[in-house]
Image (cartoon, rainbow, N blue to C red; front, side, top):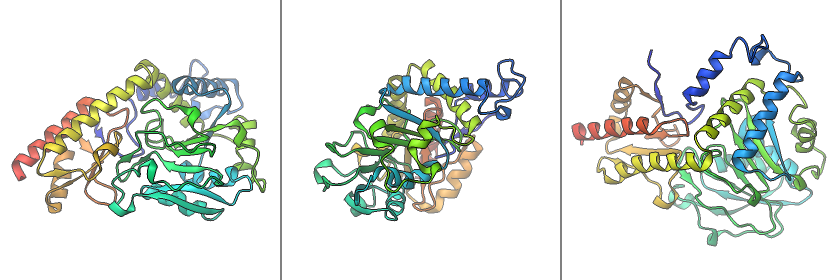
Length: 360
């Protein structure tokens, strides 16, 4: 059976090369006689897998030595709580930028721990743009400034790094980490659920500057304490071993592609192909401000919503799946993460042109 062209927002497509390697190693990893899923997380075999994954991640992102890399569980949603629990450090407030559904969730959870200052919002235009830095009302006494680097549902991405001065910058990069180079030193903390560009669901990456951990007031429960997780090298309890293994294979694949600068160029080419078609179309529409369009998640609507199901049915018949938009906004959405090829996007654009010609 032919593999589908998968435009899912997450869990998302993985590189076929990675899946092939994982399949070949399923019963016997490197002569160990074990599947990675069966290994003790304390054993030398898995320790070597975890160390290689961290080493390759550090190399790809050029992570400075004064940052910890944590392989955690709970998804980005748990980080909505862990960030304020660990980073408030006795301060009363934190600044948040509201750009859509995921920022909204982060804000809601943070309010259980501190005063949240919403320093900028794009709600006035239905979350279709990234608020300019000049419009942010930052608080110099905030413990940190949090923003969502890419809104998966709305298709809005920051293509610039906010300047927050001496206040630590925190970013939810769940849907665009590993899609382009990142200057990690500009951030206090970066977190990302793995199920977009990194690996399967179940793993969360946290990259946090040394001086920001171990200062939580009051001391957090052990599982929610970055310091304890760092001191135990992400193995305070059993980590998501197989997800870490797959992430490590993805990091190796990214290195073979030429690293993050090279993968960024591929992502620019894919996004440009789709957005150029949308801009030229009178039948399909993307609502996002051009300067803030996501390279990862491209929402679009048809001229007549009554044709949505027919469009999806035709796409499936051509081997394309997961194009239905998020239930909160409707329409369509093509998520074109690293593992989605340029040829896959071309197949989508060709189908959209065909559909427009027959229905427009």
